[in-house]
Figure 1 (cartoon, rainbow, N blue to C red):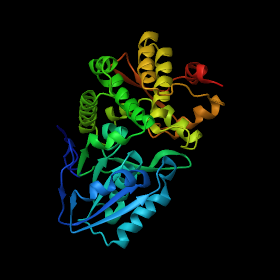
Figure 2 (cartoon, rainbow, N blue to C red):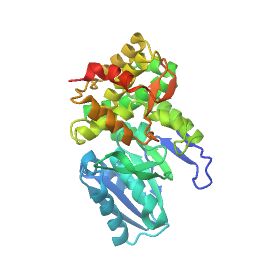
Figure 3 (tube, rainbow, N blue to C red):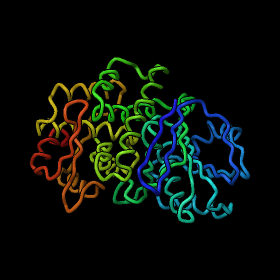
Length: 348
């Protein structure tokens, strides 16, 4: 199976997402694999046997969202210089969303841009983070506030890597699958309600469907000027939660699950979503043991953090909301009182 990502910008090239067992990759230039300690211990030796290149180098970084920063970015760039990579060299992001985002960002700025390939090893990265060209790092002000749009040359999704995923990491990826179903495809959501993703055949179908949805959205709006922003459903809230907990309490997908429930509370307050629909979404998230509650200590502080969201502009917060199951709506300038009313159930 494969999905084509067709782009309209003249500066970006179309590419394919291959959903299959990873075959041998042959390059006529230098290659550097960027991975982390966890993935390296499990899968690096296997990957190295499948790469043939002029030179193959490897950089192993610490594992965790807290390392998605300038220091790690600098380690990648320094390794590129040390191995004398040139403009025809290729970086390979071998890991989850953190590795993919940082490697892609490094590729976008090293010698003003070189190619990179995504080989995602987590479910979240396979269905979401590895596709679409969003790259970046975190800082004290929030998540992914520093970065660029830089499309990969190719993406290889091998479900073999998912067999070693911890239970929480698997569920975190499911949250992103549910996100896309709720906002874009009612039939897919209903399918998810009746099919267990722990079964391999169902999981492969869900991966293919999720990537297809995202590829279609990215093809329409590569740099997030419109419809692509809908893919951030749940993320406006999730990014605040991640920042407040210093990226140590929740995995990204877990924070997204909570963010989806918060977004649905706001959608219910605005009459876009019924209580039954919100309950169905929450039930599906909880089926995979995803968290659905977060205690907000200070509503004002939580609300003020929304203004650092990349979708906000001119001191106006943009919220991505579900409009029924399978639909979506972007809302601007929602009265603060209504946002507080929706978040009341989360106030500690």
